[in-house]
Image (cartoon, rainbow, N blue to C red):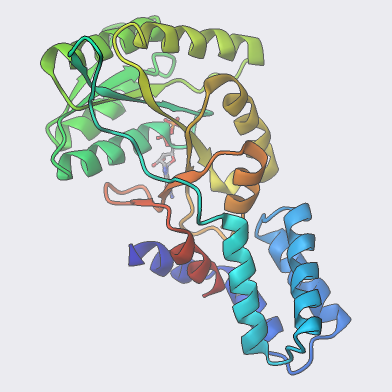
Length: 306
Ligand code: GDP
């Protein structure tokens, strides 16, 4: 878990570096406070939260007579942590479920999001984490829209000895692949079925139809344990607008924030959770197989503060 902190620190987050620079000044002037707010804005914390945070720190610094930048920094850490909300449940439910009829079905994790955000990569990394954790896994390549997606998923799966259920032709019905994957998973008695989907965002109605159908056919066999929305941390407000549509139609239970490596936009976590009302559960820290980490608020805040 120290990885998240190290990686963020190494990515040279200007949020941390710049804030420390401002806070290390002897007396914080009006300009310094403005600079602090601007730094938060640049890190994608969002206008509302940035302003609230700086105002709150200013008020508390005044009330408590804090002049020492180290104390102001501690206050900042505390307030950032509160914004990230450590009380949210970030655990992933990946345990098979036994129904009232005594039949056990796999935990189904549906992965949704716009194309290119890192869905397939995330499913691949997650399968690794689960296998390392002793779980049996089956992958469903329901991204039938992008020709290479199933191959890409299969490659990830084969590295950890996990089978991929796919269609043998492009443009097949994603719902039928999802149905088949979950059905086979139940028959084989695997613990978890991870279903990759296409990120076609033609319009809200189309997306709702597609994801609605996928959900309906899956739940004939097993309930959805998680619906993870994958969001690219580098896409800012535009990515957020697209993510909002998915959150509205897909009953999202958690966010996977990818490409947090090498970006200074860590503050997006705050904005995402606020706007979508769903906790960030996992973060992507690179393209490699081990570059997925559980999201830990304390590590995260320490990482962006440097
Ligand atoms: P999909 O279309 O949503 O399935 O996206 P892919 O999984 O194909 O990923 C798109 C690109 O983003 C690929 O080149 C991935 O290697 C890259 N990618 C995915 N996750 C991460 C991440 O956490 N960090 C970085 N740097 N690249 C990532």
